[in-house]
Amino acid sequence: MALWKLHSDGYTIKPGEVVQPGERLAWPATIGIGAQHVVAMFGATFLVPLLTGFEPATTLFFTGVGTLLFIGITSGRLPSYLGSSFAFLAPIGAVTGYVSGGGKPLDSHLQSLAQGGVIAAGLGLALVGLIVHFAGAGWIDRLMPPVVTGAIVSLIGFNLAPSAWNNVKQAPVTAIVTIVAVLLCTVLFKGLIGRLSILLGVLVGYAVAVARGEVNFDAISEAGWVGLPAFHAPAFDWSLLGLFLPVVLVLVAENVGHVKSVAAMTGQNLDDLTGRALLADGLSTALAGGGGGSPTTTYAENIGVMAATKVYSTAAYVVAALCALGLSMFPKFGQIIATIPAGVLGGAATILYGMIGMLGVRIWVQNRVDFSDPVNLNTAAIAMVMAIANYTWHWGDMSFEGIALGSFGAIIIYHAMRALANLRGTSLEAPSPASAPAGTEIVEEALDREGREHGWWQRKQQDL
Image 1 (cartoon, rainbow, N blue to C red):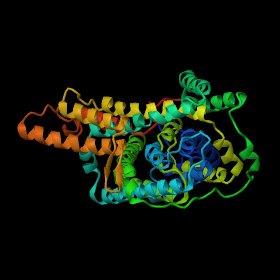
Image 2: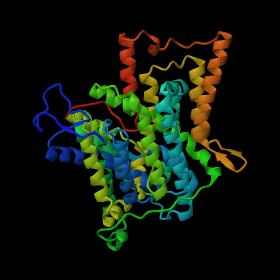
Image 3: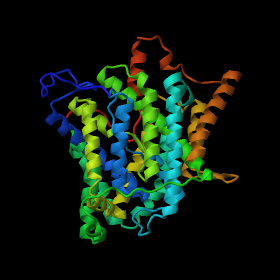
Image 4: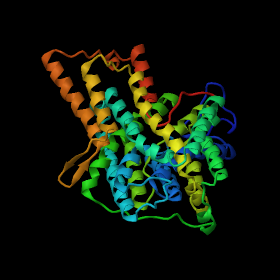
């Protein structure tokens, strides 16, 4: 890992300058920015284990370990925090049948089986990373053009809608308060506070839930003050792997988008790190699955912190990872998180799942996907209905549900229809901007758009 060079005097960032990944500010300032990264990732990261029944402290532990692993594998050149991935919510829920906040504990064996699926997906992503490292990333863009990528991202969010309702109906008043609080924080505040609207909304909803007697504090008093997180061993069932493998496609899109985003903001060419980023996230996800933590992904929330501070130093991410590891060693802290009730989770999930769905639509809009082209229209239409209705196909001992069928269906339908349309001369595909001569404005616009198109939570950059 590269050593960090002090930027300027360690405290001043001149107008137009940024602190590059290989630089750092003075350690007090670096520690402060690292703490901001912890706050930025925390709202989303702790919701995933709550929605799946996994241990929050264990998840926090593996996000810290995964971030350190990521910084090491990318040689300290690519800043990123590896937080919990929402892409795994549907397959984990399909395996465990867990409904958060319903008073029903998570079945230990089913959790082990879900962890086995997470490990398989992580190793699959790591394998893709190795291929990209040696063969380049151009084949990813050809395999998953924007219409396919947008469909896959979108269908995952909308497939999760029923699980949000299962929580909302348990405490509708608290859920509504949580939703309203998130929306108000989003529009009333700018900068970092605005980016933490989910976390602030959950805190407001939690306070209402406490006042309404919906929170049980017994587990907090029974937990110790200091101790290791609760680790959990995995188990494997090949028939369940079909639920998890499509998520690899989403993780590939997220990581590629993250590399391009950081490259655009720092002015550096980071294409050579794409394979290593995929490898690192894959290994981190597999490691988390092996110990009972939630799977990981690069976090766009933290891109917002970097955009606001102009500090892209990977030293700040090392600090953030160490902070997360420290917090995971306080069992009472983990139990406080676990007491968040169904109404609050349902309210937050209503926004989160809808946001995931609309991020897919955003990819279509930003890439000007032409839905007057029947190939694009049918690709998206069939994939979305498969996921929303949760089509299921049993093949021997294996079961493929809506997300798997919709994801692979989008890829197969698009390429089959496009090939036949080109063969018959019936294609209505518009010329691709990326095919324009290098150096033209349209290519620069396309590259910038690609750099901002992926990520579960990424918003427009805004200064504090």
